Amino acid sequence: MRFRRAARVILIGAPGVGKGTQSERLLRRFPQLSSISSGDLLRHNVKHRTPLGIKVENTIKSGGLVSDDLMLRLISNELHQRGWIFPAHPEGHVMTLAAAGLGAATEPGSSSSSSSSNGSSAALDAETAAFLSSPAHARGFHAYGPPRVNEDPSASFLLDGFPRTAAQADRLDDIVPINLAVSIRTPLEVIMERIGGRWVHEPSGRVYNTSYNPPRVPGRDDVTGEPLVRRADDSEEVYRARWERFRETSEPLLEHYAKKGVLWEVEGLSSDEITPKLVREFERRFID
Ligand code: AMP
Image 1 (tube, helix red, strand yellow):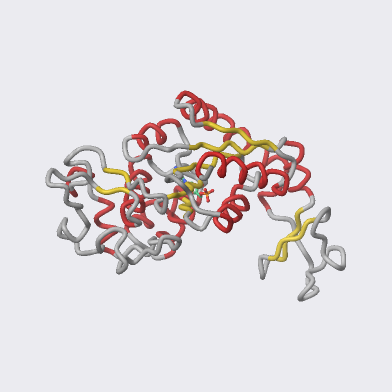
Image 2 (image 1 turned 90 degrees about the vertical axis):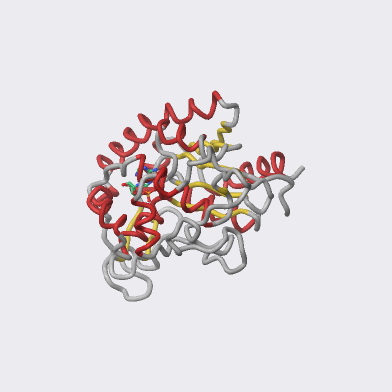
């Protein structure tokens, strides 16, 4: 199914509510949609030891929040690389990293671009990382005013994990207008029950759940027969703390998008219950 207009969507939901699952399903259902996960982008930078990755490594490890400035640079660069926004220029030219003298990028959206519309252009090289580390004015990003937004339906995206705070949402508004903020809700007790039944096989990362995906032999991995363990952060206490932290930061974020008239809430006890509602809403807003 094809979009009639560009979908610029953010997903908001507590940890464990199934944002990743919904993203995957939406991407499969609507081929024009791509996703950007801020956590994945950051982890990619850490793994590849880019200057930005080195800068944020400790913050991520300790579960803190990366500074708004760095996050904004990272996200706006990603949007730019994928051809979804163009830095404004008085003569209507697009300012690429190459044009800025850094030679790290091709024309956004061109076929030779390093990022396909559904792939990630997170493969930052040292030059791109240096670009990200420089202030916006030094690289001409906002030098000529707010970026122009690609209105083509193929420039449709889902942001996962960003913005996380109202301050980040404010700054994102200056770059690209979000036209749907989805708040995914599942009752706390239901998520706790799911987490309570979760067992993992650590060497492989295989995850089981005693209620809906049990191992063939209780307490044993299906493939190796080795014992299953509980994840340290799957404890009730740890989860309650994460939920509380999410509630505190998400309230102003939801308010931000409610004021703009783009907030839509969906509730369900499972991902399977939520998906059809979400798909229907996407069709209503972007296809019908
Ligand atoms: P996630 O995979 O979304 O849980 O993100 C992993 C980590 O990346 C978080 O614990 C934060 O340290 C950092 N992070 C991701 N998104 C953001 C954001 N929007 N603002 C600040 N830090 C973030």
